Image (cartoon, rainbow, N blue to C red; front, side, top):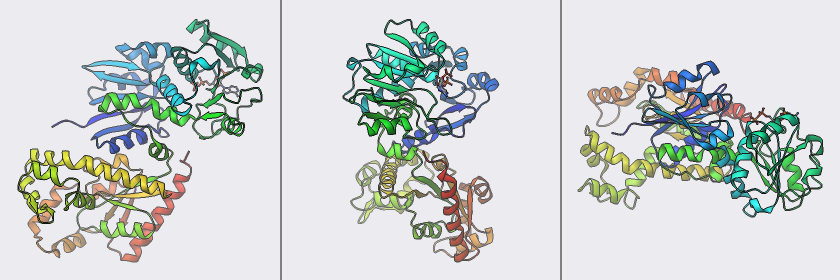
Length: 478
Ligand code: ATR
């Protein structure tokens, strides 16, 4: 049995990182059973955290503020690009050794080429504003791409001069901050790497009137997505590139290396990462009232993805999984598709058979969930519910923004279960043994819906949950 690969991002603070959302999206999309978590690690704890990655069974980590520079000294090997940028944003543990690299320049350039396909390094000088860590990643990528000239402009001129000294490349010229507008006249590319324009920071004041109409304006700030600089450039007809694309693309090499799949950066990912759609995981033990609660969300116009129903569709006559399941478990095909109870008896208690079945079904369920999710986003929904029976048991909560557990008293649950046909006290006890206890589920949940206080009461709770989530998510959207 292969172990679930553990990865994540380390920062301080870390709660605003978009990386778990981003990698979680891909893990779901490609049906990979991996983990990507956010780790809040203080600067003085970083060395120990990195050195004990192996003990914690963590295979790879991304680094964010304030660790990108300091981590360099804790690694066994740092590649050339990371050395030149002076920062590491990705650490991989291979055979007990720690390797560091930096994918920011890859992310910067891939995003530029994707969104401005007519731009090339031969088109003319680039103007880079800023001389911090982000500017170094941009400088390295443009120099490596064969740019003819870079005008490096920073409020504190000495910092820009220091960078020019480090790279010692005749293509870099340092200019004064107050000349920034004049220096645009021959530019093919203008990049803002300063913090100006970010939410909560002053805008970047720059007169673009000398900038050629076919120049590209790239702001690596992504909150807000459209900065004043990009608004101004857009109104003049310049090609605009935003910073969210860079963030998404810089994550590609890490996911590729750790999970073996080169992930796609597409519209659905952009929308998801921007928090345009909130995913609510709905779960609950047997007979707690999960399906009824799912209907309440649907009545409140929140679309629900029912993973059990998706499996049923895959196994029904004409379903996508029928051929492969019949081949793996000969004789299981009935008149209406796969005979689910026969299949159940074939795999019950047999770990290898269960794994074989899951290897067929999991990627297909992921696919249909992905389609559902994209359709909901296209229809303009701001949230969806994923109805997953064993949400916590399978680690599914890491892909949800919120979890809702449907619960009732143990007596009510027993009464409901035993009223079902073919159910016995023994069967029920067996099921309970295989599930996480109701009290632990309640503890882990963000919200609880009590289903034993009358239907009106439950429905009212569902409405309140939706309202609360809408309110708190409003601030998270980019
Ligand atoms: P990062 O690592 O993200 O690049 P940084 O190292 O803090 O962040 O760099 C911030 C950049 O924004 C610097 O180039 C900084 O200019 P200074 O070197 O002069 O500080 C620039 N910056 C921040 N606030 C600015 C402001 N009000 N006007 C002009 N530049 C500013």
